[in-house]
Image (cartoon, rainbow, N blue to C red; front, side, top):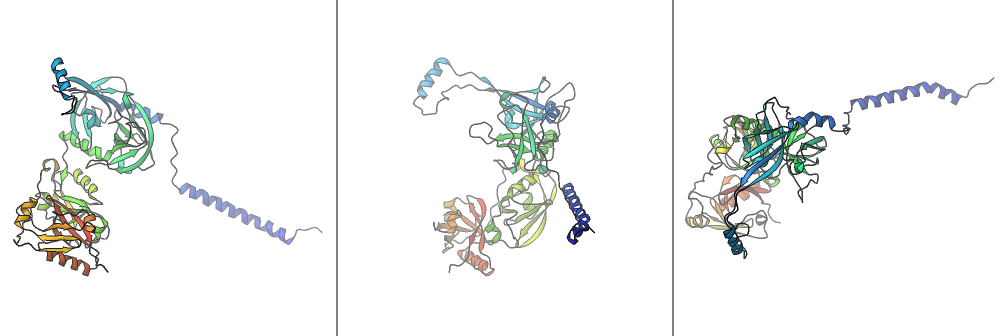
Length: 491
């Protein structure tokens, strides 16, 4: 009688279990794929987005009167050709004034005709003409400008409501996301280019810089135009390119919309910017400076080097304080602090957390206005100085106590105090970090120093505390800065 083998019978009996296991595995893979965030595929095209936003993007043409020359200004003074050109101009008369024009881009942000562009597009213009996508043109007036962020706000008077676009949140833009630029490159009007966000939080040269870098083609004439995300929101204003020849090489910069929005709100309300002012001079906390401070485990915050007359001094802030938190925002470095203070309302009382002598304390500071406080002068630190100078060598420095003679030689204020650096060993760490003869060491270890022995004491105290670096406040030409020098004893 026929039958099946024991091995075959085992395979048959196991088959349903194997199938069940395979089914469970397939279900687990499907669930994992469903839970994973979907990958952002490249768009098929940008036609729908371009059609959506085009009516709000404008070309800007400006004209200005350039004064003529009445002298030989076309050649350098002292040139051998200077007399020749002077005789030529005397025969033909001075060059008459002429008109010059420039091109740029912009975008409409309200149906009643407010338009954003770059300040450098309309700077010194006495005529501004705006061309719309539909083909009509309107003259524009300048509402206000902010050279610090290179942003300008214009106004036209339309007969009918205008199409406009809204700002997006530039802080949520991620590196690698698709973006689209639109504008008037090289006068070719209403041109579209696309790319990705290449980087964020770029700084070029300004105090309030916060640029989005993109590889979307940006050329001359794109200035002031919008950089859109894929939802048609403006996340940047195209401002600058990095290029050896003036053409796009895929490195363009757009001022982040979260900076622009604050500037536009103030220009719209006041016709000018009104930025908050804390009233301190600051520098970044480097790792060696952090090591020389009690209570600071990493290089963070902004180190206060001077507190002139102003809001911070009135609130009790002191040189040597490290600003850790401003109005609820953790301070990473000086650049970030400048931006958040500038964006804060004038007259607002904010809580500022500082590190002082190894402990944190919170100060209430009522902010002033930066635009009216640019000429603030640092206060002098009065201290009596004996007339007989004492000198000492340490840490590669030769230091002397302050005397009236040294004050005069260095053109210091009458109340200036500290140790005068009279010589620096060129092979020392002090020289490498920039200390030079004529510098004044005002503080060491966040304590005033008036005698060379004071500095020697601070060095010993630092070594006894187990720290490797001594923090010093140094003034040069009245400008303060902190630096840290190693105090480790040589073996």
